[in-house]
Length: 260
Image (tube, rainbow, N blue to C red; front, side, top):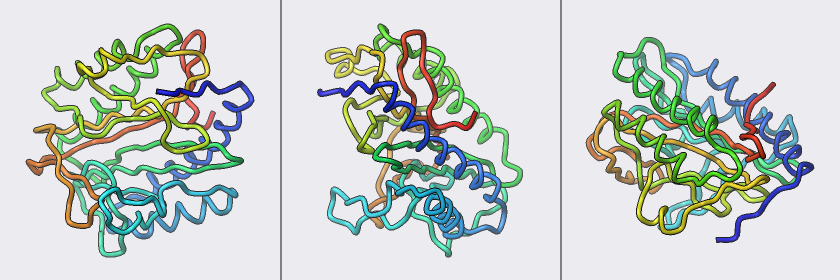
């Protein structure tokens, strides 16, 4: 596992990419209303990234199973869809949906990546609780990540938050290192496993991580749909997804995908 430590100059460059991601996600949250299509949300993201001079990260990513490359700038995953949902003008947001939006850009050679889940109109209490718990898991990671700590300590706290709420952490997909490439070492799970304990991540100053808890209301098991990209819960129950790119510092961590 070759983990690159970034200088202060590089972190500042990543913040510039992260601020574009934050601006786009804020606009998409405002635009994700009943009757809106996910295809239109994708066009909004593409236009904003182009105007900012940034390259979107997801469009054209190759599929490991031989399906067509990912065709859009954002991932839009609705209700039981966990990640990698494909935007379309045929997909119209409905009252009571929850929508996970994932987006990333590269600017001046450095990447930013973040995700959020939003309610469409009025949603039921159980879906709101799922979103709150998943968002809280990301907060826990941000509050507890600092140089000198092992990632298993952080992941254990995140996992316990989901478990105590009666939800399941997705184990098939995890967070990742990020820098000049969208996906770099290490893999960043949201749970503790034997593999993690055997090869734990010692957090070090300058380490950049995309932390992204994915939590299911029911079983943790997932399936991939026929389009070759969209991942959904096996039992059809809802899922939520939140993500920030963070930099590990001596006294804590700094969120790079936000606008101060």
